[in-house]
Structure formats: C-alpha cells, structure tokens
Length: 130
Image 1: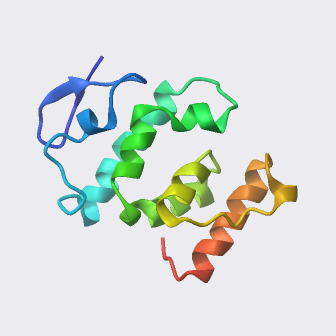
Image 2 (image 1 turned 135 degrees about the vertical axis):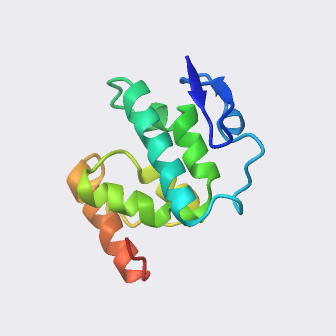
Image 3 (image 1 turned 90 degrees about the vertical axis):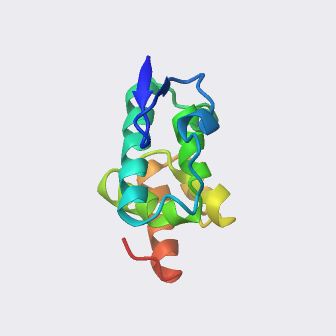
C-alpha cells in the first residue's frame, strides 16, 4: 500500500512502515498550524483504518502512523485532546510520551471513558485549548 505525503511523494504505508518514512524531509518545525492539523488527521485516519481490533494499547501504539503522530511533537497534544473529547480512543500513550504526565488514577485504568476524562481534565488544568 502506498500513501501520499505532504510533499506529494508516494511512500509505503501500513503497520510495518517506519515513522520517519511517513514524514520524509519534514521537521517538527515545518509542520505547524493547519498543516499540523491536516497531517495529524491523515495519520490518525491511517492508524484507525489499519490498526485492527487489538485491545492492547502497547500494540496499538506500535503502529507506524501512531509513532509518526508522536514524532510530530508536543504541538499535537491539543489535537489528541480534541480527539479524546470527540471519541475516546487509545491516545494515552502518545499523550504520556509527549507530556511526561500520567493523570489517570489507578482505579480508572482500562476504562476508556474515565481515562479520557482524566486526560481532558489534565489538559484543561494545563491551559490547553482545543
């Protein structure tokens, strides 16, 4: 499977593609604003389409598109929080990697909605807007 990048070049996609291959010649600084939002949307869609029915958050986070989202840097944190608010999903490892935080209380682990709510509360407390 091939995927078109922002530079309009074709690259391999799928679970075995490496994150740096998903972002050739693209630095974190070069992806900003609407470009960041667009790129995040493309990668999030790819991840959701290709990830399969895994319940393991570790396995879901290993996907190349998920790793490429993390590689976009801290600017995607509000986009991840927006995603969590609209439709809770396994974005917690990405958020923890990007922020160094883990606001989910032990009793909420494994409960998707509660985990999302913990992260959304944390994001608001930190001043994030999405």
